Length: 61
Image (cartoon, rainbow, N blue to C red; front, side):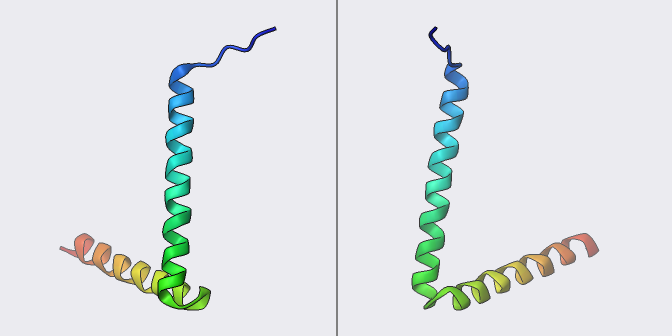
């Protein structure tokens, strides 16, 4: 019994997989550039805090 796959679902799955690999590579590079996992977490926390402040300013304006 042959399975039938929806070509659109296969395209979306391939795109999702590519995005996943790109994100993993980006995180690995961030960790390497930051000097280690703790330093990378500090960078991510700083970016998140800056984003929160920016959103707060936009909501207040």
